[in-house]
Image (cartoon, rainbow, N blue to C red; front, side, top):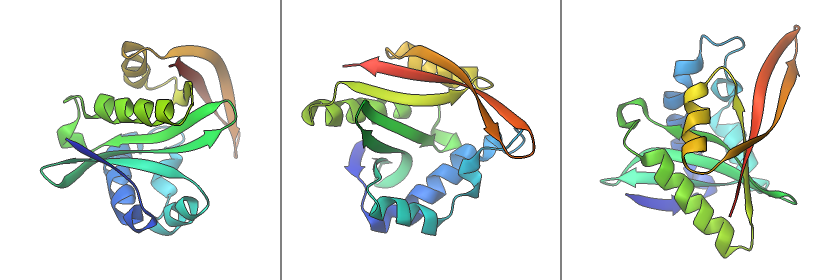
Length: 155
């Protein structure tokens, strides 16, 4: 698998991968806000400093992650692997590349948030060294509350 850093021109690829991966959450209450993002919103985020990685198998994009550098570490989100490639270790390879990026840039903590209603994602992160350090409820409009855990990995 080849992993490349994203360019602003990759916004369409990022959007396509993310939508395919996040469609499984369309019936969640509320559905993931990832499904509301557009190529334009992703492009704008990339222009404003968001970064990302895209994983390719046989020159075809199969997964990606977006991230921001914050003062307490590297915060990643929207980790996405297309459904037909899930369970093949692609997410772990993308996260390993993210760790390498962090280490090479003097960053020693990776951070993410995960909905508590998606235990498979919590298990994935636990399996590669992430720990839960906080549980909280995110309050959305219309009295919708989402229970999330914040996870971190020290490098």
